[in-house]
Image (cartoon, rainbow over all chains, first blue to last red; front, side, top):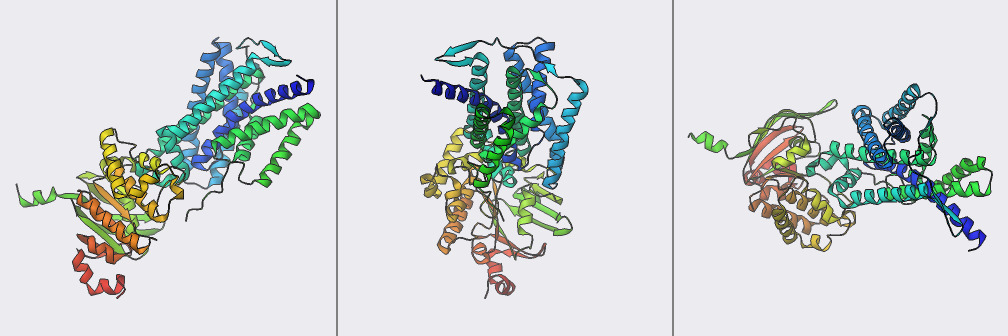
Amino acid sequence: MSEGIIYWLQQALNAFQLGSIYALIALGYTMVYGILTMINFAHGDVFMIGAFFCFLLSSLLGLSFIPTLLLTMLGTALLGVMIERLAYKPLRQAPKVSAIITALGVGMFLENFTLALAPYPKQVPLLLENVTWDVYGISISSIQIVIISLSLLLMLLLDYIVQRTSIGMAMRAISWDKTIVPLMGIPVDLIISITFAIGAGLAGAAGTMYALAYPVIDPYMGVMVGWKAFICAVVGGIGNIRGAMIGAFILGTVEIMVVAFLPSTFRDFVAFTLLMLLIMIRPYGILGKPRIQKV
Amino acid sequence: MSKAVIENSNILLEVCNLEVQYDAIKALHGLSFTISKGEIVTLIGANGAGKSSILRAISGLTAFSGDIFFEGQNLQSVPAHKIVRLGIAHVPEGRGVFGNLTVNENLQLATWQRKDKAEINADYDRIFTLFPKLKIRLNQLAGTLSGGEQQMLVVGRAIMSRGRLLLLDEPSMGLAPKLVQEIFHIIKDINNTGTTILLVEQNANMALQIASRAYVLETGRIVLAGTGLELLGSPRIKSAYLGS
C-alpha cells in the first residue's frame, strides 16, 4: 500500500476510537432529551465519575478490566437514577430553564465533590496490557481494538433495546407523547429511571475506556468531553439515537484530521466552527426532524 | 338479600361529588353519577363543560377530590398506569396514536401489563375483524395513517388493554360523515360484546341514539339526565345541542 493510504487509514482508525467514546456519551444526552426534552448538563460529569470509579476499583480494590468496567457501569447507572430522582423529578412540571440550571448545578456539585476528595490528578493503573501490532504499516493497539469493539457492542445492544424490546418501545412512546403513555398501563417514572440508568451506564463505560487510553484523570475532565458529546448529539439530531452515533464519528474524524494537517491548538477551534456550520445548514441535525407541535 | 344490594352489584362505576381544579379554575363542581355494567352512557355538553376532565379524573390523569369507585374500589390516588390494570381503558381526545411507532407497536404497547398470550392473539383477530385496514397497515408508522385509521387504531389499542369500562373522548371528531357512522357502529359492536362504555361526544345526535343513558353538562355541573331517547326528545336538548 502507498504511504498516503496507510496514513489515511491510520488517521481513520484513530478517529474511530475517539468517535466511539464521544458516541457513548452523546447517547446519554440524546436519550434523556428524547424522553424528557431536557438537556442533562451533568452528563459529562457522570462520565468523569465513571473514570474515578474505574480508578477506585482498579487501584484500591485491584480489580481487573472486566469487573472494573461492569461495576463502573453499574455505579454510574445508579448515580444517574439518583440524580434524576433527587434533582430533576421534583422539577418535571417546572419551567424547562429551571431543570437546565439544576443540571448545571448537579454537574458542578459532582466536579467539586470529586475535587474535594481528589485534589490532584490520579493515575489509573494499566488495566490491559497494551500491545501494538503493525498491520501493513498501520499501527493498531490492543487498547484501540478494545475501545472500538466494546463501544460498537454497547451501541448495538442499545439499538436492540430501543428498537426491539418492550422497554424500548415504551421509551419511544414517551418521546412522542408522555401524557398518554400511562393509559397503556406503562409506569412512566420507571421507564424514565431506566433511561437514565442506561445513559449513565454508557457514560461509565466511556469513562473507563477513556481512562484506558488517557490514564491521567482529574475532576474537570468531563467538562470539555461532555460539551463535545453534547454537540455530537445536536449535530446528529438531538433525541435521535442513531444520529448521536453519526454526530460522534463526524466530530472524532474532524478532530483527528485537523490535528493531522494543522497545529494541534487549532483542533477545537476548527471542529467547533465546522459543527456550527453543519447546524446552520441542518438546524435539526443530520437525522433530526422538527418536533411536531401538539395543540 | 335485599333488592338494593342486587342492584348495587350491577354498578360498575360510581362517581360521588367529583371536583377537579386546574390552578385557579374549577372545571368540575362536585358532580355525581353512576354507570351500570353493559351500559353505554354518554356525556354531552359544550366545549369547556368539563366532559374530558371527568374522563381524565377516572383514568388517573388528573388529580381530583371526591370519590370514584370502580367495581367497589376507590380510585383516589391510584396512579394512572395501575387504573388501566384494574380494567379501565381510556381513548383520549385527538387521536393519541404514537406516530413514531408502527401500528403493530401501538397495539403491543397496550398489552404491557398482560401475560395471557393466547388471549392477546384472540384480541388481535378481533381488532382485525373490526378494522381490516389496520391489518394491512400493521408495519406502517402510525403517523402516516389517515385520521379515520388513527381513530380505529386508538380504539383497537383500547380493546388490547382489555378494559371492562371503555372511556371514549370524542371518537368522531374530525371524521368524514361516513366514518362517523362506522365508528358509532363499532362502538355499539364493542358494547354488545360486554364492554361498558362512557362516551363523550360533541355529536349529541349520534351519541344519544346509541346511549342507554345520558348526562348533560354545563360548566362543570350535571344539568340534565335521562335515557338516550328521552333526551333526544327533550326540547331543551334539541335547541341547545341538536341544532333544531
